[in-house]
Image (tube, rainbow, N blue to C red; front, side, top):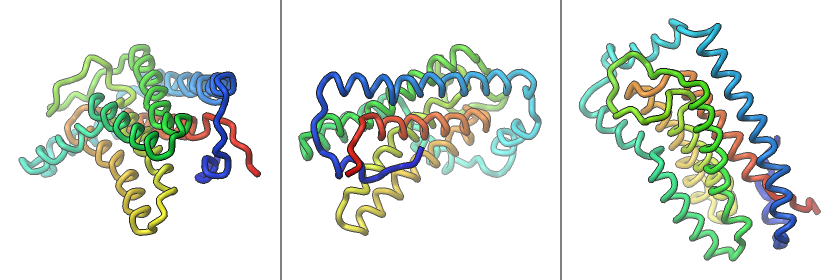
Amino acid sequence: MTVDLHRWQRDESKPSAREAWRDAAARVIGPAVVLFAVIVSAGWLITGPLGGLEEETAVNRELQEGRSRTALWDTTTEIWSRLGNTEIIIGTCAIVSLVILWRTRKWWYAVIPAIAISIQATVFVISAWIVGRERPDVEKLDPAPPTSSYPSGHVGAATALYLTFAFMAQRIERAWLRRLVTTVCILVPLLVSYARLYRGMHHLSDVLLGVLNGIVCALLAWHWLRRRRS
């Protein structure tokens, strides 16, 4: 799926309720089922035939036993990790979406971030329950959430939310501000990813599939409503 960054500017017409429900089902829910199947299948493969990969475990051990862990990095990565916390993601999404609604008066555009994190969370929670992967056998700097290690919910949520923000930021007219906001939005999921590895909460594949989940959900949300090309 290619990213049409200007699709919402070319066609600003309001959809009917029927169009909204139809497009949400066909362009978000249907593809999300396929995404869910892919992530679960990959999880079974990782925990089955590919289980116990020494190369993957080495990443967590290197971060724990090497010189990477310091008091400063412990504090820094705690802040980065919290950017992917459920309450932070939901709160940020709500505030930004309300501001966008106030500025544009277009609810069908303002709901894009909410669609992205909702689909991501659904895929993540059910996949984590089905796969049930244990967290890395290293010292953990955060209390373990009730969900399993695979895929990373923090990374998936941060990727889905901030990638949609990056798409939306392309409407900013001032070039320097547009570039700054886009850079920050792309950087946040990377910081969350590193933090979750550093703090011993996820395997490398958990993070990578979390990124995949977030990217696909952001793309589905961005294209959730049919728009005219002319």
